[in-house]
Amino acid sequence: MKKQLLIALAIVTTVYINAQTPTTDPTKSVNEVVTADNVEWGWLNPLRGDKSPAAGKLWGDRTKNEPAGFLVKFKKGFSSPPHIHNITYRGVVIQGLLHNDDENAEKQWLPAGSYWQQPAGEAHITAADDNENMAFLDIQEGPYLVQPTSEAFDNGERPINVDKTNLVWLNAKDIEWVSAKSNVETAFLWGSHEENQLRATLLRLPAGFSGSIKNLSLNFRAVVISGGISHHFSKKGTKNQLDAPSYFGAEENATSIISTTKETVIYIRSNGDFEVK
Image (cartoon, rainbow, N blue to C red):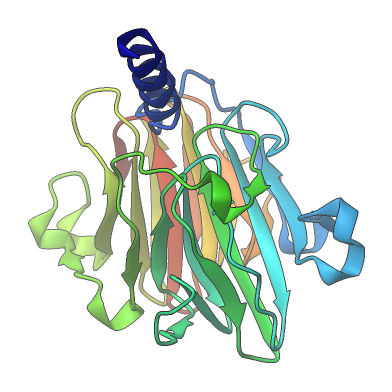
């Protein structure tokens, strides 16, 4: 009996350890751009076809054991059965109204600009309630799988739902790595600001902004959540209009030259520091 108990504990411990979300990303990002009209779309669950939400690739491969960022489109009235995921994911609403919670929870419709975190192993449903609904999902490991609630487990992390009205924005004057004259604002979402640790922030650029973002880390990825930017990597480089939900990645020490004509929010996931000027 004692031996069987030890084996069971070992299995539980292994599941728990394997479910812990990585805090670093060893992948070197490169200078790349995916415009909104060039996103590669497929089905989030190919076996269900058009009954599944659509999925659009931004970076990485969600079907492999690697970090990935992708878009998900939900039809009006979509509601999933209760399920779990084998890995933790973070999401930002780009369009419409989304709900992500326990199946018995009262609906909390998150509007565009809201943020949520779904821990590995936590049972939940996902629903959509607008004519067009889209979110950006960020995973630190893969593959991204949908599994039955009978396989639920507790990996020590907790779900988070943050309505856009509850985000706390810091003014540029409060942030040493953002030029005080830029009127740029930042809201911290997740991660650690210790050296070489993954973290994600929202960057809100005012209309008429003209400046740059310099990546100082191994890994830097940015997704336009709302609005749009004119973007290029050098004065002679190709200029792209990146409207929501476009993406750009940057190699270490690369500078992205950007400008806006309207207020724009960008999700930035990095493995270290970056500078906004």
